[in-house]
Length: 228
Ligand SMILES: Cc1cc2nc3c(=O)[nH]c(=O)nc-3n(C[C@H](O)[C@H](O)[C@H](O)COP(=O)(O)OP(=O)(O)OC[C@H]3O[C@@H](n4cnc5c(N)ncnc54)[C@H](O)[C@@H]3O)c2cc1C
Image (cartoon, rainbow, N blue to C red; front, side):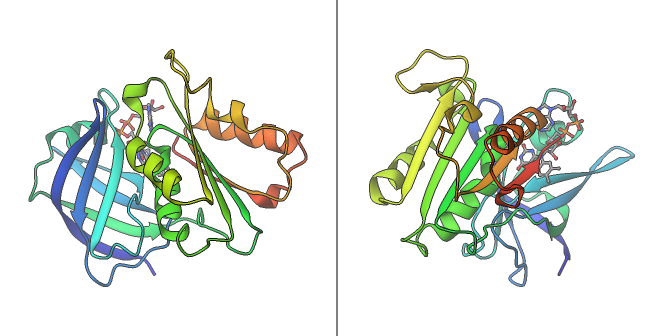
């Protein structure tokens, strides 16, 4: 079912220097699956444009709609988000999308993303990790520098708490003790009998898909969401 509602902004927080956490109130009847997105109908002056955003919170956190948005310089939505204040309302449509957790495809689930592409992966992991102790969850996230990392401390604490969760942050433009390069450089060789969930901009999604297909992964086991 698709809902239409005006969502009131409850809080706005800087996640990094160019990413915001926007937390809206959603109606009690609003249901979605982890991994789905909403479309915001955004207005500036006489212009009105739709923009889609993955829902960051897991559905079990009822009554709220959290979005993790990257601020693109001069972007239509980005400039609206920069000026948004608590109490402002935005028209929302959704949920939409088929990028959701598939609990029928085996026991190994790999989540691969970059930047705010973490949003649907984070929602799926938070929703399903606890309920599936026999399944393995691996999150491989790419960023430019350490200051771009999203939810890093929380994900490290998940890793310490849950034996079935592995978290691999990768940086492309910083010297550090962790993994370097891009998320898709760290898939390893053993790629059979796994389900892959890929989210981010075009390059990451296309490159990762191609790499997996070249290694013989069944296309049915590759799920993806492209942000552009
Ligand atoms: C299904 C779906 C879910 C999405 N979920 C999210 C989300 O959870 N968080 C999020 O930050 N974005 C998400 N996006 C992207 C989002 O819809 C917008 O495209 C983005 O916020 C830029 O919009 P804008 O109006 O500010 O920029 P526009 O005025 O549309 O200009 C966009 C320009 O910036 C470039 N660009 C640079 N970085 C990005 C980027 N990260 N995303 C898109 N374009 C970029 C584009 O290539 C383009 O040239 C999603 C897109 C889709 C289709």
